[in-house]
Amino acid sequence: MIRIGILGCGKIAQVRHIPEYADNKDCELYGFYNPTRSRAEDMAKKYGGKVFDTPEELLSDPNIDAVSVCAANYAHAELTIKALKAGKHVLCEKPMATNLADCEAMVAAAKESGKLLMIGQNQRLTAAHMMARKMVEDGVIGKVISFRTSFGHGGPETWAIKPGKDTWFFDKSKAAMGVMADLGIHKTDLIQFLLGQKVVATTAMLTTLDKRGADDELISVDDNAICIYKMADGTIGTMTASWTYYAAEDNSTVLYGSKGEIRIYDDPAHSIVLKKPGCEPEYFDVEQIQTNDNQTKSGIIDAWVACVKEGKEPEINGDSVVSAMRAVFASIESSETGRTVEIEANK
Image 1 (tube, helix red, strand yellow):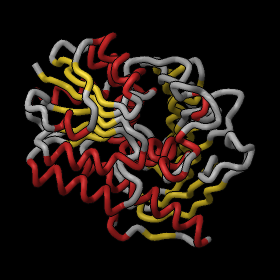
Image 2: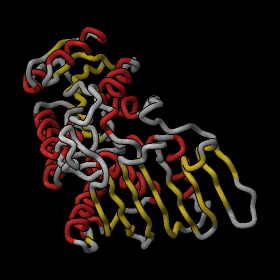
Image 3: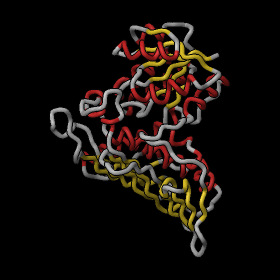
Image 4: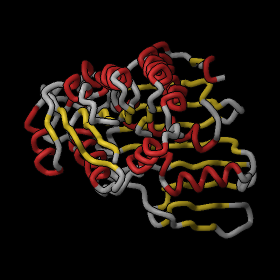
């Protein structure tokens, strides 16, 4: 039985991590820490387990085998590295960290400790995304020439435990980045997964168009991001992330190939639509992707627990996500400088 510690008992922990651990027969929720102690107490009362006063106290408990880091962005690297050094396996929420040096330090700490590090890039695990990747690998639409991928919804202020404009997502000191780190990292990581190619150059604009904080001033982080990505094999496409899609959530990707196109989560009735010249569309109804309003099992926890149980390196390990984080940070640089940024380490 794998004993789990939870570092941070906010919305993502309460909606995904904790209930999915509770549903997994191979693990036990052993301990909880949260800066606001009452949240940890609520989780311990509901699921069983201990409440710890500090992260260090939780990490020093020899009974805990693995932890989920579900804290605000700024704390990801510090908590992950402390946990790895304490001999715990770590599942860290996205974004991996708030700067590239910290991302690389997390990977190094995992290697030095011999413990597993997985990042919560759950879009790789949806049935439609896995099927689409196989279709690309099998050459169903020939060579992918271009793409567009989007992730947008009405914003994180409705997602927090206490909904409102004072959410930490809008606080640059805690979030560091806005929608690019919240949603953009998902689709950046995803497009690399689907194409089997890394982003090697980006031309981006990150801006704040509409979101206002509790003071009614525009927030200090980006609420919209649009990037033109160049992949290692020359494929180009757009990645759009937005917190201002107020009417409906969009989590679609379209791959345009030399022999047709794959439309993923683009049609509300069908998970995948395959279109080829001169042929009727083919429909694949594997599953609908989860949304903020329709939470389903992410697959991350089951995959993570299986890796810890088997001592197997996760496919979504820290090393595999660093390249996507490089693209995120390069896009921020591109937006700030107004020029295309080459990502040499991804070439």
